[in-house]
Image (cartoon, rainbow, N blue to C red; front, side):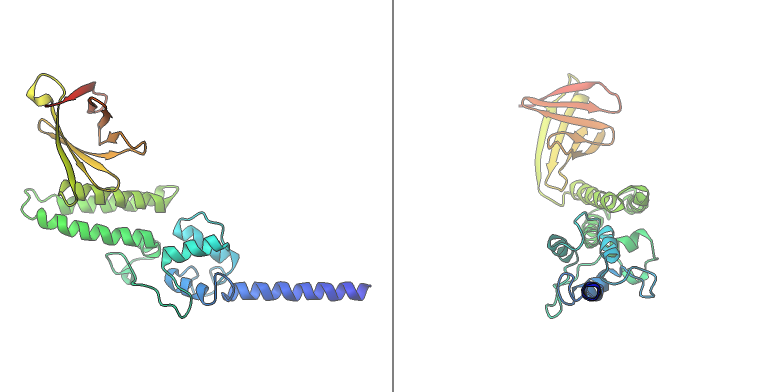
Length: 272
């Protein structure tokens, strides 16, 4: 009886070792060749034996954190999600065109904001999109005086890099990119516009309000009142818009407007 138990334990140990070996070598996790193809894209280990073993549970968890995801590692849904994020195909099925950021990933310092962008496909895509939008905006801003666009972009990059302080650095960066892209698209009229809509918020001409809505993501509007202009983003509730110190609440018969920090709320009626 003891011999039978010993034999059974030996078989279980061998099977467990075989499963673990297959997982760490990448022959089972998400399909043949998938682990090596994914590692080549993202470089989770350092190649010197200091990181998690290739294809291990720790490797899968580190990969998930790197991509900013929440799927349970090792499930089919997780495999599909990572493959979609990285556009990684199993061996023998070449992937589509690689979509990297607008800068050379080989020249960025380790552990920098740029390194994180290179490692995250969504951030890489947004960086490339921003570069395209910025190029179009710069062409339209060539005759602006003073030339503020490049200085503003440098300031935006500095702010983007501060996302390391956020609890979710990837989400913070993604939001920064989306808002900057939308801002440039609206300011330089690079997307379709709905407007111009005019409202009267008081008796004086300075109380006139002009709104132009833009098909950006997130949605934006540019509000003009007297000599002041405010770029405003639609809020998650799907109706209200918020600027730096301005808030607009659309109503059935007009809009309500707060123009400035702690300023009184105005009721604005459409001009016929």
